[in-house]
Image (cartoon, rainbow over all chains, first blue to last red; front, side, top):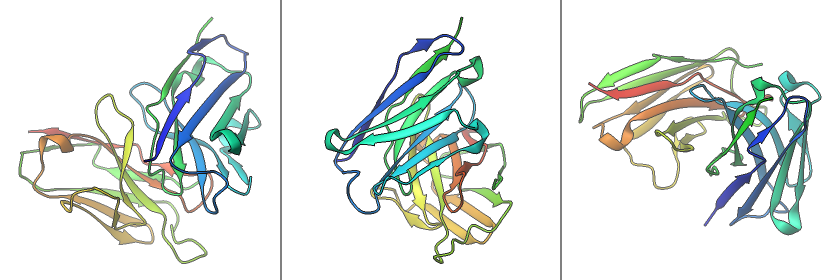
Length: 116
Length: 112
């Protein structure tokens, strides 16, 4: 049974760094072809893909967030991480992690509010 | 970036009816490996998106055969037959052929 769960700080201030953790079970990021992606959704709006990390440690980022994103993984503990630096109110959203290729399983999401 | 254009923005349907949602991409979604990575998701109110269809026409595990996907290249369609109350929500198409992955803006399915 594949499950994923996101965790984050809930609220943070502008210019801080957002650190998110995705803890998953039912698959391994050391298995050929496996990947985890991060997607966010501002309240009442659509989905925006942020980054993906693959079993071979290949990483891909959405260039719209320029160099603010860093994705990583801890294969031993079945976790994936995303950091977003220099956050702004525009980063307020629900953040999801999902298993790739097809985003076939999603976590419940973690709400992040950026506010001074 | 590949722009995904979904139409209509919203759709009203009677229970038991049939609907179609269109998704067009600004570039061909055929990957170098020959696969077309076009997926459909449903986001029910207050829930995470769930995968319905992957690679254009493949139903994900446990998805009813009332959902069907079709299309090729840049033009794709999701059809839902015999609509049930549990089908209501926002439908998104998404492409995984080219980075950055992109999604359509969504189609809200409501009861008439």
